[in-house]
Amino acid sequence: MRVFRVERMEEPRPNTNRPHTPDYEIPQEFTLEEFRDREAWELGSGDDGVLIARVSFEFPLSLWAERNGLGQLESEDEQGNSIRSFGVRQVDPFLRWILSQRGEARVVEPAELKNRLADLAREVMVIYGAEGGSDG
Image (cartoon, rainbow, N blue to C red; front, side, top):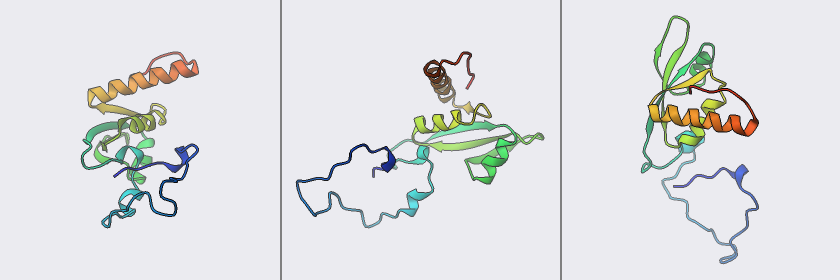
């Protein structure tokens, strides 16, 4: 099973080898509902490995994560900060999403994912001319 984001396609062209015929067959067991509500990092096939990422959310972002059903709640402290776990099939979209939370969501585990997030943050800072560092 392959999933494509239509808005990312540039200059799509029809297959002219067999005009007016489908280019592929949709499997009979396929249902769009199975994919409709997934985040980009959740997309993939059963053959793709699933990485469990633990993420710390600062309050009030933790409320937003809870209300939107993001990840699974593991723990919450008295200040409302929480740790949530995520099943990640595609690391890059997940890390970009974490970066978009502007430091209010941080990868706790696994260490290699935390390190990749720090590397990505540094790459973004270089591109946009920012100074400083990120602990992921």
